[in-house]
Image 1 (spheres, rainbow, N blue to C red):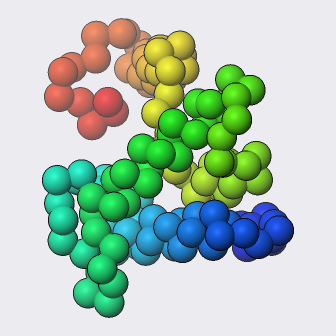
Image 2: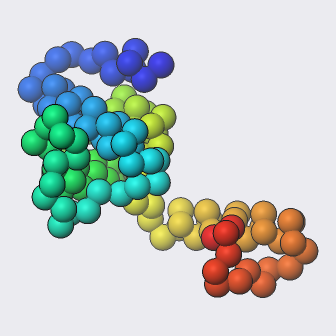
Length: 127
């Protein structure tokens, strides 16, 4: 599905975006889906590339900034199709405060349904 969604008119930005999406996917494969690259880490993400953790961290930041502009109806370099591809890949979007609040509220309601109360311990496997 992701590959078919990636078929857009080729441009320099298209190839650059897809190459960096490849590195994002490679990083997730090597380090796990919850891992985050560090902007301070200048070592390559893989022994076969010069692309660094810092490069990937910057690309992730740029994708988040572009998505924010896209959702605001402003000009950006990220297409709706690319957003869908990133969504399917469980991209680590930075959510606005309302989205974060809603997500945490849903987590709290799930905790309450399971435990019968809302006294979530600070160090819980659920949070």
